[in-house]
Amino acid sequence: MTIPAARSSLLQVSRRPGTDNALGHRVWRLPADVDTDALAPVVWIKYSAEVIAQHCLEVLRPQFALEVRASDVIVAGPNFGIGSSREQAAAALVHLGIAAVIAPSFGGLFFRNAFNVGLLLLTCRDAEALADGERIEFDAQQGVVRCVADARGRELQGRGAVFHCEPIPPFLLDRVRAGGLLPQLKRRFQTQGPR
Image (cartoon, rainbow, N blue to C red; front, side, top):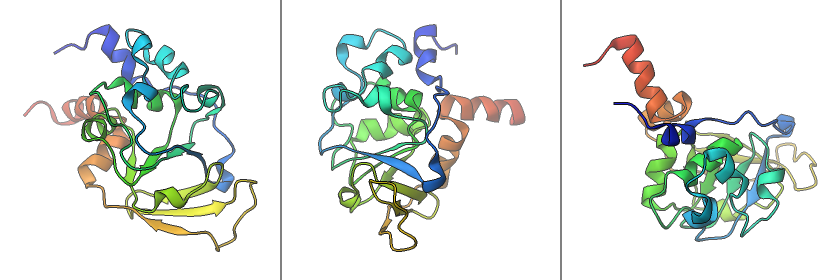
């Protein structure tokens, strides 16, 4: 099966410059109930992931697409990604280089789409305790998020809060490492051949 050109562009990962993450990943804090319309506005949906990404979250954080850098993370309230089933919502975040989205809960369709395009989601009950601009480190395999610097960039030197996330099945972690479902399948067929 061939992927139509318009859809394949959704899976291209941007190589935007990252921030200096010697002090961890910068947090972009968002409210509860962020829907897929905010992530991929319907007026831009017929365009490439690059164009859609330029308008990602502009209704909530107008400067987001201009200021976000590769390795930044989004921390949100419950129900992140509710709404339509559009794959472009997760693909726009991948294109912008978001390392992970951390929230107490996610829309079911968004959850599936995110892992399929290689976006890591961490379900963390206490995510809302993290503040905008803080720096964090996370271990997806262990399900641990640790705050390492405050919003002013001052290192917390072991005093940072630690949050626990729900475990992610190994097959989903493998999918994220591969860059999504299609790259994962392509790699599998190249090494093992079709079954």
